[in-house]
Image 1 (spheres, rainbow, N blue to C red):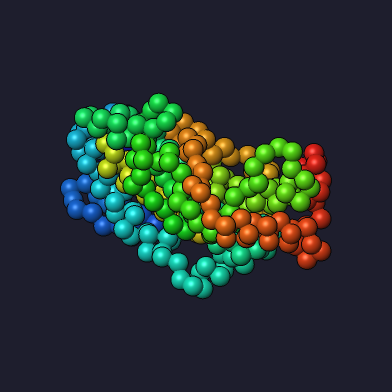
Image 2 (cartoon, rainbow, N blue to C red):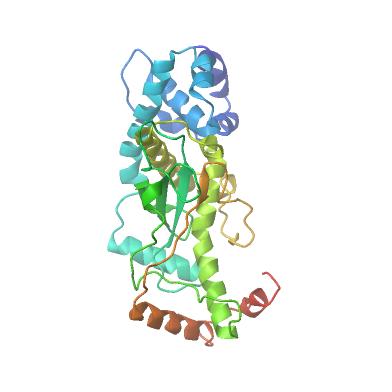
Length: 318
């Protein structure tokens, strides 16, 4: 099979080189079963190489000595299987205990209490689908599928929603007392500026999660030229692989070491096919405003303040 009969077998003798090439350890691949005549190992290798590099189908099928239609079948099928096999293990529906652990993690690591996740969305830019009209057209003038994600304190995806169309993404989020908003405006008093800093610090965890995703899987470095249903499969597979890598490898390999903060992480969350989503919460409730006031007061109290917040808000990053 061309490349898989030579390079892949050579890389199998060197775990570090295999990981660099495929963005994954080789020891997981045997858990997924596929039919002959192309082995499970080779099918997974084809898919991971596509996700890791973003190479065109043409480049992939020439490298692996496969037919174009074969590659076009293998990649979405393997993405489906990756999601079905790994999602129950690495992105399960959170239990009550899971939510408590996430809240404890945000308090300990990011000093934001009663937080069960950082929420954000991104446009995943795609090639204009045939005969789709304005369904996938977004306010930026391109075509996209929307990825919404709730992220935990360790940059893992807790919940994702990958079915949004670009045209349906720009109306804002529904009102909720559970979504914390910054205070608007520039001429804010000290308490409001500190609240905004503390909120931004916690929210940037999700920004960096998207940055890590795009950096690891270079399929996101350019517009994705697949049918929308296959883009959905790619997004779901890469998100659950993101969690798998975070939970099974050394943190220094994926840029999420404990001492890193959102301020000092280098990954950009906007790169190539991943673009910012215009978001707002429509008509926040009175309860949401009251909760925001309570947080503002808490962050100014002796029990809620952190030593560096004054400097961080007034020109000296920590």
